[in-house]
Length: 165
Image (cartoon, rainbow, N blue to C red; front, top):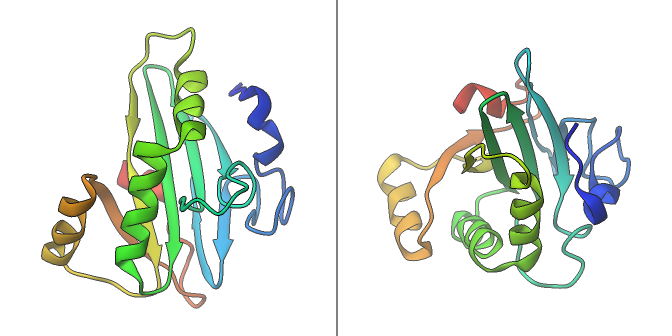
């Protein structure tokens, strides 16, 4: 079981529990954009709400974080649900990963007591899309890599991050 000490209050338990962004145990949604994580057999996962739950002040941060644990690997998956303001999305992901002490603490708790490598893969979920060149132009100034930009609209199935890891 993934145990997060003081951060357990921000783990999604059900629809709108503990906060509105939770659309289920492993699904997050905001303003018509949704994303989920479906673990494979032998894996366990949780969804955490960062913005407004773990990060309670006005510091820029991404919306949520999935933690995925497999027998020999772990992933921290920061997620930003965004309309069309991609620059802001990349900035929020970069700030979360590189500057927020809460993210560092989560990383240390998640990594603790196991020699398993922890991979960090950031995602943007948007109702718009950009091409690979535009994505690379946004990654460079922010000093991060975004694994993928997932397209989410109400009339399509919710994108599953697990397919992209």
